[in-house]
Image (cartoon, rainbow, N blue to C red; front, side):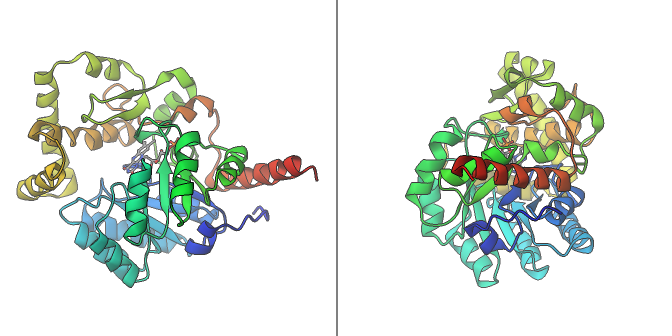
Length: 353
Ligand SMILES: Cc1cc2nc3c(=O)[nH]c(=O)nc-3n(C[C@H](O)[C@H](O)[C@H](O)COP(=O)(O)O)c2cc1C
């Protein structure tokens, strides 16, 4: 194991060895990837939005059986069963709760009272200010080049803006893959980096080989943003399916959404009543129509088709622009060691020592 250590507020807060986070990616960040990342000294985060609550509990136990290192769980603050998931996190002694959308003040307080470190992900300064005022311990800030749901402001602009606005640790996401990026993020005022696409492309990631091969073959220009999957800007590999979605009309989109909602209900163990309640929560305070709420089920099902079933023709492959720069599949241990060694060399080169 690499003995380069860079202590930051992130390593202090969470007890991880290195200021690197492996983000919670639906269907990808399961027990195998998370325990490998945690063992490598990064903060591994389990993606729970695509798991039933029972599956979450067993996944958490599986990670604990594989590693003693701290790890986290990513959840949707607006899920109808968020309280049950929080109970699992607390009961099982999970170190970090990460949120895709801003959690409520009450949820943050509940987790903090139980000693859990709360780290929401944000894509705008005002969201960072809000969760900081509510007591969040740190924030992940994702720039527009990042994979999955994403904003339009680049990391190089958003990160210093957020770092100047809040006085909790800020973790930079969107576009990172190496030690130069880590040093650049630290220079911008971050306490570490969070990487999605880079950890997806490791030998520890459970994604089928054929899917990994599509990512490795992609150039930067092959990564695009579409709103046609679920109505929100979503960064992914450009494929024939994505082109077809871009061309398809409203009726076809809705039909697909209904099919996916039915499949997601079966997968997640949710009742229709709970899905409707969740839908109402999603709509609340936002300008969303029921058709947009239904579209939300597209993402997990289309992601599953590729990430689990290996169907690059039927599924979507969420990806950051950085996919265009990645051409190997190291293990998590090799990746983290490499990033830390590069960061160390970069710092020395910059300081002339
Ligand atoms: C395949 C994939 C699935 C993702 N799923 C989720 C998710 O379920 N929840 C979430 O908060 N973010 C999700 N993301 C976003 C990542 O957590 C992370 O913020 C992003 O990948 C960072 O940008 P990068 O890909 O440039 O490293 C996903 C990203 C990818 C590539």
